[in-house]
Image 1: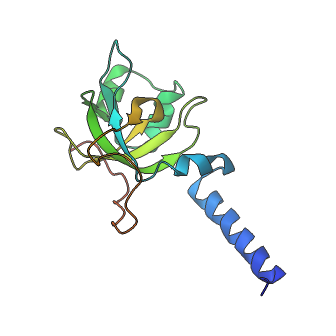
Image 2: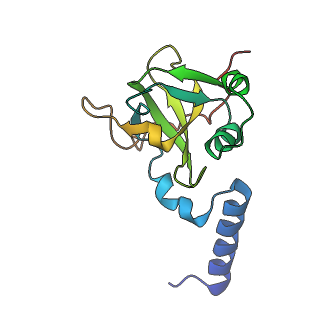
Image 3: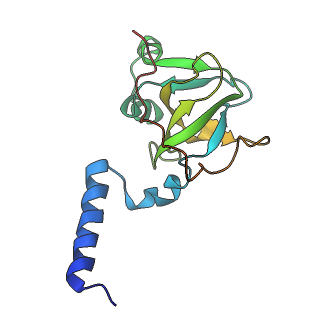
Length: 151
């Protein structure tokens, strides 16, 4: 049995509305394949610590160069040591021209259990011992990112 045109049109309208409401451009589809994947955080070799941001909006502003001063950055971030493991729970394409923003749950280190935002360039595949790969189909989905700060 073929779906009716009315059903197909309704489905297309629903999908378009959902994309508009959640701010997900059509280009975000490949990014969504990262949700549930275990990653390791590390920045560049000269300065490998990673900023863990308290909001996606502030991270996007920082990534596009729209940030006032260092004090403002440190008020909304904490620094994670390289090698900190996390699980991707959200991905938004195009935070800046070259990077996506990832909502993650920190799995190791002093910020374990926190929900934060990071740039995709600071996320690397986790390898070995069952920590990598896609999210188990039967496991519950983690909660959305919340504030990285305790103040």
